[in-house]
Every structure is written in C-alpha cells, then in structure tokens.
Image (cartoon, rainbow over all chains, first blue to last red; front, side, top):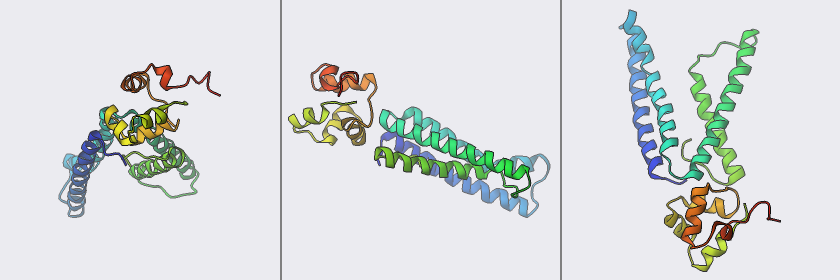
Length: 137
Length: 67
C-alpha cells in the first residue's frame, strides 16, 4: 500500500470529513427526533449529513488530480470505474425490481454505501490482475 | 511492454526501492513496469531512459518488434 504524499493528504481529509459526517448525522437525527426543526431549517438540517459525503467525493477527485504517481493514479481510476459500474448496475436492477413491486423501496443514500463496496471490488480486481491496490478504498 | 529494466537495475546493484526513489515513483510502479504489467507514459519512459543514460528504445522493446 503506497502512502504517497497525496494519499496521506487524502487520508487526513477523509478522516476530518468522516468526523464531520458523524457530528452532522447525530445533530440531524437529534433535531428531528425531538421536533426541534421545522420549515426551511428542517431542509437545511436534513441536508447537513450529505455535505461531508459530497466533500469526500470531492476529496477523491482532488486526490486523483494531486497524485503524482501515474501507476497509482491508474489503479485509482480502475477502482473508481468498477465502483461506478457496480453502483449503476445495482441501482438499475433494483429500480426495475422496485418498479414492478418485487422489492421494497430503499433510501437513496444507500447508493453511497454501494459505491464504497464497489471500490472494494475494484481494489480486489486490481489485486487479482495487477497484484497491487491503491489506498482510496 | 517488454523492457530491460530489471537487467539495467541489477547492473547498478539497485533495488526496486532504489530505482523508485530515483524516479520519484512508488516501488509498486517500478515493479509493474518491470514485469510488463504497466506501460509508463512517455514522460516517465524518458525519465527512466535518461536515468540510465540510454535512449528509450534501449530500455523498452517496441511492441511491434517483440516476440
């Protein structure tokens, strides 16, 4: 697992954004459970936990730009392509099953979990085919 | 892409880590290039060749000429 300077910076950003996500999620759940938010505030508070996750996507993009090691960059791109393909495939299949009433409705934010799982698949494929994996998983 | 990286490195008694340090890339990159699993970009191929004081075609075998 090569810890390039860009990978270290990505990791710091990932940890900070994950902590922020946890804090915002607790805040939002508490606010809604205790009926402390309403109207426009409710919209803002509901969106708050999504913002650090969007930040993580941006951090991934920045890592891709900042990574100077072209081989590691190629591993990352492959990993992200696997994640994208896996997520889109799952969402499409589930969408049709849902549409025909064969499965229950699933909250949209689970797509993020699928994306991360897809990254894991990509890392395994990199490991199996090239014998290496990037840190972004 | 076939190449003479392993031989050139061995002639200088460099480990993959030594070469990676000189090229400012990860050891995994050197290993992937050496084993032909990854074809370097033209700028990196030039850096490798220049490090050994050779022309690119003295380090990397043209795919059309490889057997």
